[in-house]
Amino acid sequence: MAAAVPEFYCNPTQLRDESLPTFSKQDLKADQARDPLIALTIKALTANQREILLTNSPDGARLVYKEWERLKMLDGVVYRRGPSTNAEETQQLFLPTKHRESVLRSLHDEHGHLGAERTFKLLRDRFYWPCMRAEVESYCHSCLRCIQRKTLPTRTAPMSHLQSQGPMDLVCIDFLCLEPDASGQGNILIVTDHFTRYAQAFSTKDQRAPTVAKVLMEKFFVHYGLPRRIHSDQGRDFESRLVGQLLELLGIQKTRTTPYHPQGDAQPERFNRTLLNMLGTLSNVEKQSWSCHIATLVHAYNSTESDATGYSPYRLMFGREARLPVDLAFGLSLDQTPVASHRNYVDRLRKNLASAFEQARLTSGNREQRNKRNYDLKVRIQDLQPGDRVLLKNLGAAARHKLADRWSSQVYIVCKQLLGLPVYQIRPDGKAGPLKNWHRNHLLPLREAVRMPV
Image (tube, rainbow, N blue to C red):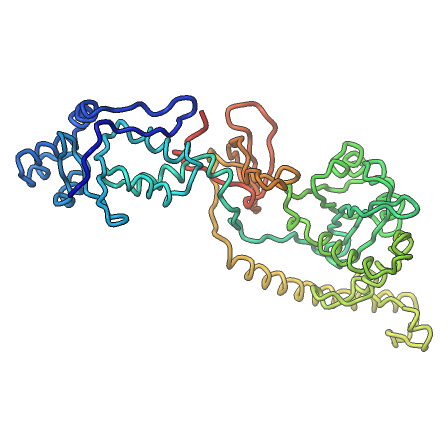
């Protein structure tokens, strides 16, 4: 026998500073009578005529019709017999539409923001209305707090690559920060030629803009010439007015990655790992003066064949292999062709470089395409349109806290997509602020119905 229905229906769950009001049977009867769907159900139950639910029926009546055998009225209030739990039959109150949002808020927003399935189970033990599961899922999936905290980042943009046509067409720069050595050097400015993979590394005591400008001018440009473009991340040292004015004066185009997306400047990042591994092999005594060993380690890297091009960076940059100590010790020469004259040497060098460049482009292109195919297999492409609302991924120091949200609370509006790139220009929603360029993988589109915090 079904348990008797209590005189009052109560839910003590706190809603901010107030609890849900207590409803008497008379309140519930009145609210159900004013709800069109429940009122029709009451009429059908009272007359014991199921077909009434199919005549001039409001939305959801056909679903209620299918539940006819499980509907009942107790003391003038409509209930549905729910699934049995612990061998006891549950009585689900047919909840009027006017109370659904407050109940959802009570059992989700004020109940630890549990997931849709757990929230549905809480409701299922207490209430019934047509399409309840779908409504619960929609409510939970549109909860901004859940989106900020729980939504996991996914790859939503295919891989894109920087393109270069030859040596010094594109140079990438980046800073690597280490523990200061005995001389006080704690930073390494990495300069990498994108096409040849030729790298240079310069130890510095700081990452200030004057240091960047001085090193580039006195230690790189005067030895290798001016590049057509320089690419970097958005570090303040690289984006400073001083560095910008120097590059503008020299006629060098400046490009940059989007924030927290090292794949946009991948070559320095890969070389950073290689150099760190090489420095890590130094003895404990040598590590105390690691800045003294950078030049020889970088030369060793440049003299070794690159998997990406099939040639050593040194050969692609200078047209010949580097002569190493072992070559001198054993009288070896990697280039056996005698030189008849300067003109003959230049002609042969031009021919050899042209052949090497073409082979390097082919090898590098094949490798990039293979990497792109493997990367794109896990991509769920989802383009954004101007006017879309998005959240930014929490990165940097804020993201390292275990309780931190995964996504920011500030909503942004998409302005446009940068030509040919998975990068979008965005602005803050509802207030003035600077335009920002962010990679698609760091943007989370919001549904139209996302509930903003009160």
